[in-house]
Image (cartoon, rainbow over all chains, first blue to last red; front, side, top):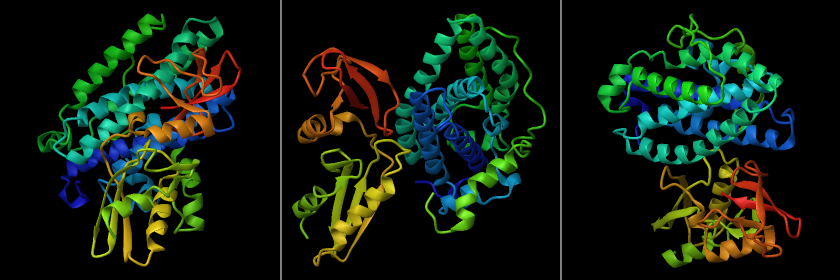
Length: 251
Length: 149
């Protein structure tokens, strides 16, 4: 397994961005426990959250030996999460739409790692892809049914898409040193190509659901994932609640 | 300590979600070895986000460390292979069905009710009480059924 001192800065940055995305989206999904529109949906969002947090842990392990402290106790500027994953999305239509947009992208990111020069990463990809199939099925089952339903649901999804798409497109902003991650063989596909595949698949689904929308420019200001959303400090503070009371607590 | 006796000790460690069902029957044990009295066990998780992983590792360590012929025990969660329901033993499957009304999907995707044996079981929700179980319903005896996935 790769250890942090063997990773080039570019490869580290690529893994860090992915790990932080998984951490933040997992944390945001987990907030639906007890608040989902019905019991099974509470459980579904939280099951998905558990997987994403599990993926974050496994990815952090390639970067650090102290996963908990690294995951929770960095300065905000040291995180590399995409803004899409940091947003609260405290309406279920938004949370569901983000879950779909994100997991379509996540599938492609695992794919980019699937022929990685690192055996440990390849093994992780095999596990993650099995889990992600359930996530995509969940998102698509709901979106396709809402799309085929009444005008209120369709309007909500359309408005969630309009709000979220500029953030989702920005997930593909290449991390600093992506070319190094490619030349290391850590990944075998660059963000340009992944972004195109993602856009094609999103557009095809939206067309099928008669929810096509004008394609936006990425939200500006993410600064290669160095800048945080205004909502991030509160999210990080809530994640730190346990470790600041008991630094030996297990995450 | 011999390798067969390590296997026997592991068979006494139950999954925390299924008392009576061992981690061996559940297919979590991938490898084990012993050197100079120190036992090393390689496990694989059902799902990456399973919250019981630390508990399982702790239970394995205490099962070995209580023995006089063992100097220590290390548990490692392995990146591969990927766990699947095909790793469950026959005994594990039988116990899941009889004690927990949990079944495995057949190759053709259908389900058999563990209570009445009917084939009229339909999926209800992909998310069940744990990460590795979904919920179905028997239309014949009207019992909820859990599906290991």
